[in-house]
Length: 366
Image (cartoon, rainbow, N blue to C red; front, top):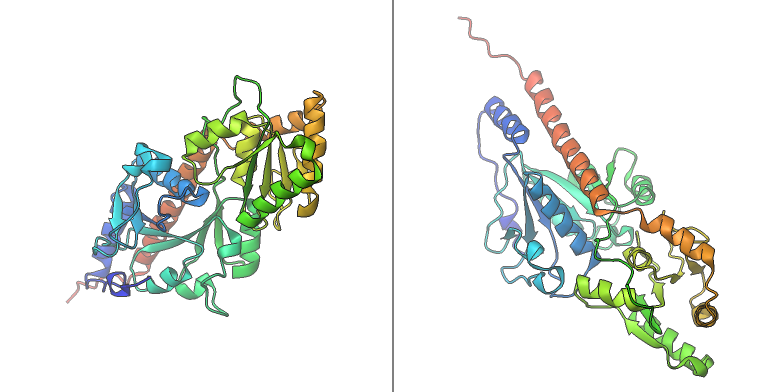
C-alpha cells in the first residue's frame, strides 16, 4: 500500500474530556463512520469481497454510516457480478485523500493486509481485523509480529474453528467475534430435471484441468458429461448454472469456510470435494462425497454418475444435505451482524466512559 502519509493523520489537540464526551455521544447516536478496506478484484467475483459488501449493506440498513474503502482512485465496480445494490454503496478512495477518521470511527481491515495494519497505527480510530481466510494471516505479516503489536485487539471471523486458530496464533487476549457467512436466497433447486453437467471449482486452475482430463481418459463412455468451470460468473448467473448440474466438484485446501459446497447444497446438487486443511464446521461424513486424495476424485465421480443414471443416488446424502442447506440464511447473518457490531460499538463506549471516570476532577477552588 502506497501513500501512507494519507493514513497517518495527526490527531488534533483538543481537551481530552471534551473529546471523550463527544466520542461517547457520537457512538451512542451512530454519528460515526465505519470503513471497510477492500482490494480491487478487477471485476472478478470473490466470495470474501462479496461478504464484506454484505456487511456494509446490512450495517447501512441498520443506520450505521458504513463505507467501502479502497486504495486507488481507479476502482473496478462490482456491478457486473454483485449488482447495483452493492455497487451503489458509498466508496472512499485513500489515493484521493478521502479518508478522514476521528476517534469514534472504525476501520475494518482484511487479514491479509498486515501492511495496512502497520500503516494505520497512528490513526485515532478503532481498528478491527476481518479474517475470512486463515491461510492469508501470515502472508504480509513481519516475522515475530502479531496484530497486537499494531494495536489491534479485536477480530471478526466466520467460524468458531477460525476463531480458535486465531487465538492460538495471536494470543488469548485477542477478542474474537464470529459472524458466519450466508447463502443468498437465489441459490435454490431448479424446477427442471438435472442435466449431465458437472460443476467444478478448484483454487488452482491446474487441478480443474487434471480432474476432467483424467475423468475423460479413464471413463470415455461418460464423455457426454460436461464439466462447467464455475469461475468468474455474476452471482445470480452462478446460482442459475449451479442448479442445472447433477453434481459439483470442489478442491480448496486452504478454504476457511467453503461457500461453494454450501451454494451447491442449496441447489440440491451433491458435492464431491477434497477435505481442506481446516475442516469446515458444516462438513460431516454423510452430507457430501469427501476424500483426502485429489487423484481419486475422477473415480468417485464416475461411481456417483453411474448411480445417478440408474436413479440410485444415496438417499441419506440428500437428507444430510437438507440439514445443512437450512442453515446459513441471510436473516441469520443479518442478526449476527447487528449483534456483533453493536457489541463492538458498546465496548468502545464503555472504554471511553472508563477513561472519562479516571480523569482527575478539575479543582476550581482558589
